[in-house]
Image (cartoon, rainbow, N blue to C red; front, side, top):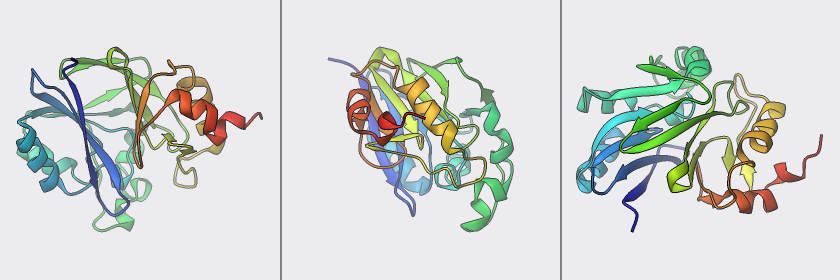
Length: 214
């Protein structure tokens, strides 16, 4: 039986999926997209007996980053990862929209990554896949050994991310999904930033992007 665990904490005003990813036998964890309610996320870490060693951000919108600093204060050794191409958005309250939903702030990741980088975290290898469209610096994380993709707000179950926010592009998100994600193994489980999990096979058959030919 696999030691892989992925737990979902749905947080914030728009129901963002924050993921706790860890190996049952190791107890080191990665927190993906801590979008709000840091106390709840920290309580879940204690409940599962896990120690986060990293925060990974799929992109920089307010609903995916609001609890980062609270978790940083609780685990001072934690490292925050984000895409190199998302650094400008993370650093600008207007672009990351924190200024529109409370006190605006900028966020500085500890480590910037790029397409093709492989992060060795919590006992797994996480491959960075750049998927511009929802934002210019959006990325997905592929854990190949577990057939898992964390897709942020790029790919949803039978849907896709909005492109009407700063740095968004409808042409780019369609290209990202078709050329970067639909080429992954069809049994890959997809854990999106909002909503229920899906699979690459299901999305190739039912997602509207699959039928877009331009």
